Image (tube, rainbow over all chains, first blue to last red):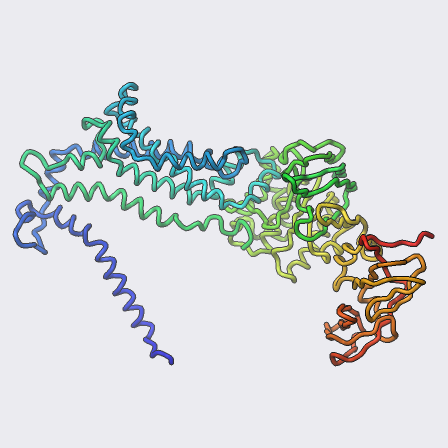
Length: 280
Length: 348
């Protein structure tokens, strides 16, 4: 039995309605944050919900005058970006070796690298604290950079390795007979061919680093090294009690970079770059 | 330009023998085809010549210099791969240029050489495209241009046409042969397609299970097969191989009784090509199993006992199935093979 078919326009409209509704559900918490962040303090805590609050920049002004947000953002950016650069510099050659070179214990080393990720971070918290104390790196952005890099290195290596495994070996054979050495092959053939994987790994590492809390709290004791994640946790709005609208706004600001990264990663998740290299 | 000598090369992977004790002389400017079923060791042999794999034993000499342990990038050898292996992030122009850059050829020469190579494979208009934007045939031509551009001593081609459709394959085949004659570069070509081997080769090397079965010109391989493997591998349809017994100058098998030389005795295999079988007579008697007109000829399949025999019949030959039919073999073109599969030749 053939079902009566809806016209194309109708089914398209229905699809948009369903998807639009779902998008709204997903966006609701974010919209709610914004709505709290941009209302006056008097409308934040009320017995009855206020759906259409008065627009107010009170929280914004409070943040700008009372809180070194630029410093925290700067700390975050230096520590996170630096850690990602360190990760890529170490992980790309390591991933290539793990993906391509035949050597004894290759699989074991690969698994060992990944297993560092399985450990509960609290186990190493105390040793790491004393290590950095001895190095004189407590309360320093550079220490955070090293810690973030160490935390994410295994993951970055594994993601990049999996992309490298997908690159046809013929490409390397071709480059070798064309006269290229190992480093040239890595630089000119492998890295460009797995660029989507490298970007994906970098973005994932950046997101993890931005959200890192435990070690940052341990190492950073003053504004010198506070990143957004720890500063946010310490933030209560000042001496006048807990100021929820300011907290909402700070949370939103901390969330924006991650949102941007996720949008980036979405674009690069497709592995389109290797298309056409081999067969069709 | 260079000759290639393989001296007793062997490749073992643990207990598995990929190529066993293989010796081969490839002359300067020769077009040599390595032919065999998949897993016969032909690609491994080629990869050892390229330097992408090291032989477990033996010696490889290219252009008079021992190359056995030399890295692939230091051998003046260009290779074309089955999957084209174009660098996906580079334009066709940069792809063709890559070997020139790697070999330290002065940048001032690059452009002219790239354009010359691209023109040779009729790809001049596509230089700024990425490989992903080309069709299969164009990609294969780009891969050829990349091999040609640096004028290597040796071309190695690993099933370069197997990803193309039949029509394109034929035209690329002619193009490759023309190019090889024009450039006079020693070429080793690997394929499992006997038509490619027959049409391209100066000499064919037939391999099976890691060992050479026969080396010869296409004519020699076709008309003088050394064993049942070669006989059954070459020709389309391939040679009929009928197992039976021979004594007192007659070969006998179910449905078959044909004259044979006196020196053929005992359990033997008779080989006869479809075009050396003729409808009529009584060397073989069986039933018509099927008739396949192809336009310029008609193939007849005859069931004799449980064995199906291919016959190349006259163009207008037609028959119903299950009709008795007699076949004569051309006595000048019968081949006999012993129980070991090797050809039985007259002592005279």
